[in-house]
Length: 238
Image (tube, rainbow, N blue to C red; front, top):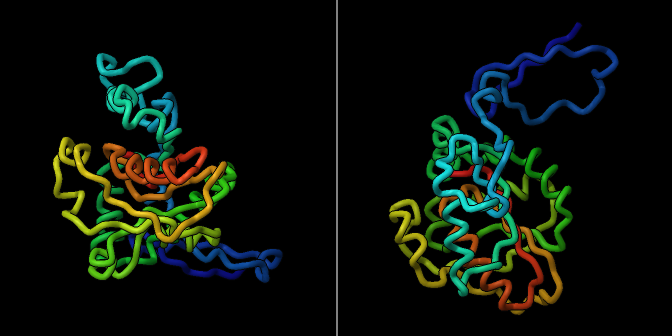
């Protein structure tokens, strides 16, 4: 038997795979996450908010309104924001382990981590069958600081087509704002060019769903440009 040694994308430790003659000439597994790290990534499943995908397990039932969490209920009560985001689904719960991984990905320029999420992201995107996949953009200033746009990196590594329909207006980092300040902000996007969006179903891609403000601002602009439906997929649900 032959052995190949791969390193986990998340922790860097060795993950040994045993190769047989039958799969020796098959495509080598290019991206790998070891079993311990896989176990620390907590999938979002079970009963969820029908819009944002917040898990209801452990959620305070006093804030739940039917199939909606309290946040989405408030969004839907506001005529300016109601109905803009059809649904969000997230791959993983934003636990302490994933927080550290995403911090490395976003703020320390560890681009290769996009490959740890791209396979599952690709599966989910194909299930949704959107007309257009749109990564949430960074401002030019923020992208220069980080070296790449993490949302675009995930789609690119997934090998799926996407369009850069949005441009971001530079402003204060969202991570530095309170929950209330993230919600009460002016439009942070503008359209890039004059895309034909009539009757299109669009899937937005981002790294973290926190308050839903960023995704709803993007959805608002795309709806005003004629898009029929806007949903979103994120790596983490904060």
